[in-house]
Image 1 (cartoon, rainbow, N blue to C red):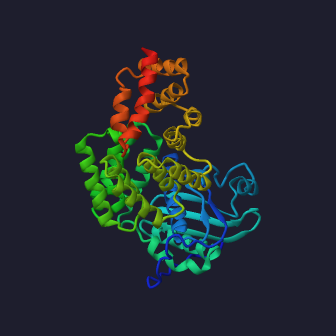
Image 2: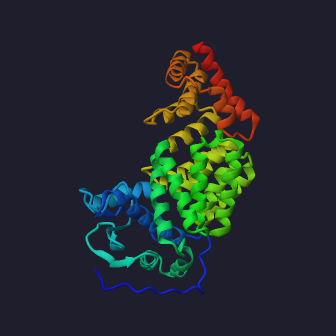
Image 3: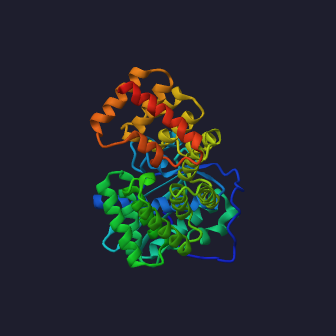
Length: 412
């Protein structure tokens, strides 16, 4: 490791225009080893993910998404050379985080693909908001190595998101809980986001995360009008506080979609992509939106791009791909995508039944509908099509409804 870090800033240099990316190779930010209480793992993952996003926003290197990079920890039993080869990465960023009372200790190394010799390494011992300066310094050094001409963007994309360290930690914990997907965890996340917003009323990401949690707890597209209105207000306030935060635009895009403002939704998601062209989640969200706008072929291209950045991706990519395949009449491919989901929640099973019905496999469609009725007796497939999926074109909604009705009739 090198000596103590210094924290320099140069606010006179501008962010590099979005879309202009050099050929600095592929970077994977591995999940840092957490050395401390198990309950603090979410904090380690969150602060490292913010480093990943900072490098991605500066451009230069292509940065793999967190869910792919984090599939391999810095302490993995697999050799780092094999990890780099498996991910298709030219460089790896790995390290250790230790929470020691009020202090955060960070040990970090940037390695070439083979993992034999560090290109750069550092150690940090920080407290409170000084963590943001450590994150900024790590991003600066990584960008210096991968794309030296872009170092001037770091001070702008890595501005401290809040002056309240406790608020930041609440958002990190809440984000980890949101990803678990269970209603209980999402309720805890909502409480953490609300607490963060109270601690710092100017913390944009806290308001955006709160909007997302409320939307998720209310069933996204099935959310009542009052929830959608509140989420829209929170998302708008988030952007007023953090106008350059791509995650805030992504949430705004989702809220606008379920308000049936499809053009406004696409505008917000495109802005999110401009601010962080390496965010695979934004690309996948764009794919979902474009299918609902009646452009499924274009959606599949966006989803392919997302998978290139995130080869070890969340299961919901299969859900979105199936929606696009169904829309263009590739029912077999849609059914195959849905069958890759580890758990078929009611909406996914409804669509799988519709795929088999459109293929003329009415016995299979009937079995899925019978199982749906037994497992979820209060679930309405018709309501799911009309309310939960925000199709812009009536013909697209009718296309899915046709498959669902054939499956229901087969099960009658």
